[in-house]
Image 1 (tube, each protein chain N blue to C red):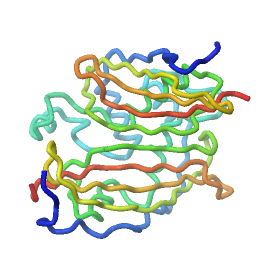
Image 2 (cartoon, helix red, strand yellow; image 1 turned 30 degrees about the vertical axis):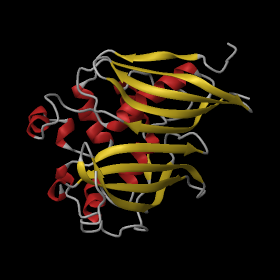
Image 3 (tube, each protein chain N blue to C red; image 1 turned 120 degrees about the vertical axis):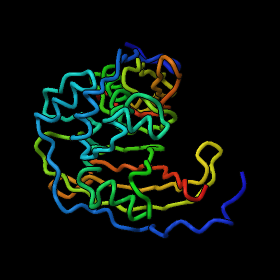
Image 4 (tube, helix red, strand yellow; image 1 turned 180 degrees about the horizontal axis):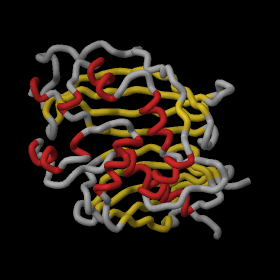
Amino acid sequence: MSGVSDLPPAPDVAGTSLDGTEPYVITAEQNAALCRSTGVQPATDGTAHPIYYYVATQVAMGKTVAGVCATCAFDVEDGPMMGSSGVTFAAPLRIGVPYRVTGEIIGLVRKRSRKLGVMDVLDYRLRLHDESGAAVLETTNVWVLPRKELA
Amino acid sequence: MTLQVGDALPPFVIDSVSAAAMKEWAVFLADPNPIHLDAAVVKAKGLGDRVINQGPANVAYLMNMLMLAFPLGTIASMESRFVDNVYAEDRLTAGGSVTALEDGVVSCDIWLRADTRDAVITGTARVKLQA
């Protein structure tokens, strides 16, 4: 593998806001369907499946998946891939609570990979806030954007 | 149950990943990416011959394993690294092992393996045990 000094730079998108505009409410019906789709029954104590950390932040952030890709000058049809996902919870997620999302793109770094050729690695961070404004979780996700046109 | 470092967590098995569930997840995630819905698209992209499961659904299997292993605990944090695709009809096993116990928090290595391809996710988790 060589470096990327011969390639055009990745778009400078660090700091782009991903703040959401609409609240996200986990419904009992959707939580039950989601739980059953993964092979478990929903909790009976008002808590939602913790994977809503990803679902709620993706759906309620300020850009769609296609929009995030477009910000990175990447066509969603070219197939973004999840690289990693991390989350830290301050509290369990609950049914019926209107959550809001804040967040931002941390960086977009162009790399060469033996497997994928040229790719951009997108790093972004999102927080989910309850009605009081307190953050109930923070998640950091990494997507891999294969740049076939630069390979 | 007395936990010790090195203990294996009880596995959580998905006998066959459901293509129908992927259609539900496309709605949950508001993301109609056709690689999760149309095997012809997967073939055309050279990614295989079956639809590909959404990454967060795979993370949910790992969370199920943790919640069943620690029914009175809550997941405090989790890191998942996606190392391979999961396809419809794959048989998966989610598992892990205890790496540390401190101040009522158990740390674990976790993994999701496909019977035919080994690890598809590797990661770590911290679970807060009931006080």
